[in-house]
Image 1 (spheres, rainbow, N blue to C red):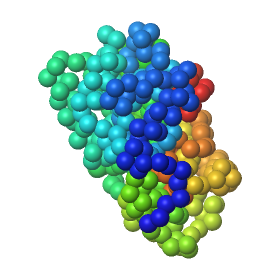
Image 2 (cartoon, one colour):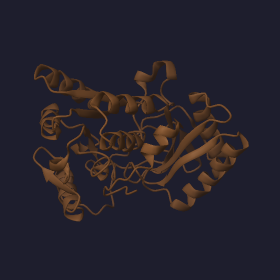
Image 3 (cartoon, helix red, strand yellow):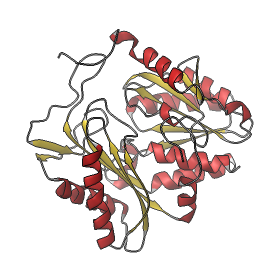
Image 4 (cartoon, rainbow, N blue to C red):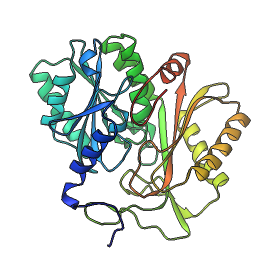
Length: 332
């Protein structure tokens, strides 16, 4: 199909994206070999460091979160495609400053293949690495089969919490345990009202009628089995929030984080209207909202919709979430 996008050669999208990203944020990041986006403060890091990976096309994720207090190196693949394991092993070697490396991988087939091959090589070479997988999409598998759940926006707060723990001098085992505890207590549900087009091929990722929405849409247009007539903001908020609360078994008096992540073509007006209803529902249920974010963290080109993320929180996790960071896409 015909696209209307400000691009040049479709075969050179990722290279040109990264060149522009580096030029725009040269105070924070440097572009290295193998499509690595590197934290400029990495050379000073006397701590556990963090490496992650993922395809381009989801900006600001993932490279927008490289910087102080979050990720040290992101390894970037082609549009919606995982990078190869060699680049990830090279990134881990470059990142390691003697305290070990936390390697965060989203649960998608290509990323997991790369992640497993990377860890196999790291083990063979005796590198000090622990892998944490983010897998929190409640639409495609029940909690008891969480290994089958897709990784959505939950990787971003995981970077933040792990990065803060590392900055405070925690050991690799401690940082990994904190990140894993957070990852085990998070859930995401996405909704889409319009699909995106793949910027390299022009193919439509999801085809929805004008009067339809789909709750459970995956990162790349994968169906979630929740196609239904379009609902209002309040109705959609209630359906999705209740599903997340039920999945996490959140009880009265507990503390939660709530993130509304716009996926590319949904306005902040819409997101704030949805968030307003979510906050009211949490108050009604006597669930304490202790951390939140509304905006675009991980997009899918011009897909219209959002991902609703919830995590069970405690005082330690709130402390890490509120710790300082300085990255292109998030500063606290």
